[in-house]
Length: 114
Length: 112
Image 1 (cartoon, each protein chain N blue to C red):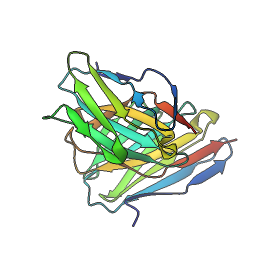
Image 2: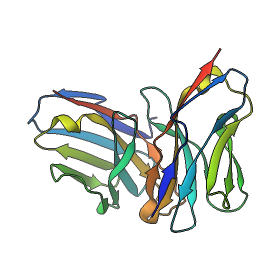
Image 3: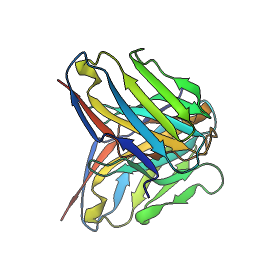
Image 4: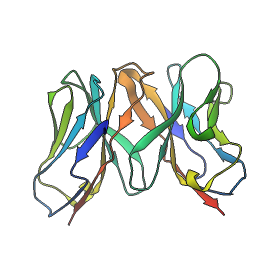
């Protein structure tokens, strides 16, 4: 059983399109995250949700909109895709918001914008 | 301010040699520190973490790390490298709201 899953694994699209990435966790966790990993492998937090409420919203363009329909799901919708959005996007989850809580990562979605 | 610095973006060791991956941190609160490993085309997997208590932390796959407050360091070691250890390694510090700040990663190559 995959703990944190993401779909799709690969996404190739044209500039200007709108796309979504889905994330699901079956760990019973309350908190979920989206990270962006750039071409130099640097990982940066984008958003976090706790019990479906937005907790962290880093300086991300408002073309990126997360949605959490329930505690087990956190989706990422991206409008008007740009070349610079090409990256690997990772979803993660943790039990809660305690700083000691381990984050469990999904396999990533490689987004390529042409 | 909180940040993580990983010295050496690429480290090469011979199979069977000591692995040492360096991590230094700065944190405005008592640091909670993590090491993750990323194998090619995969997500991140927790190796070990330090929260409180014993400063020498043992993790999976024979890795361990020692928290040294005086040196603001949390270096990762393994006595004997194996070919399967070749991967990208990330050090992270967690802050309020369990927000993780990651280092820039160290790519480990194991030479047969």
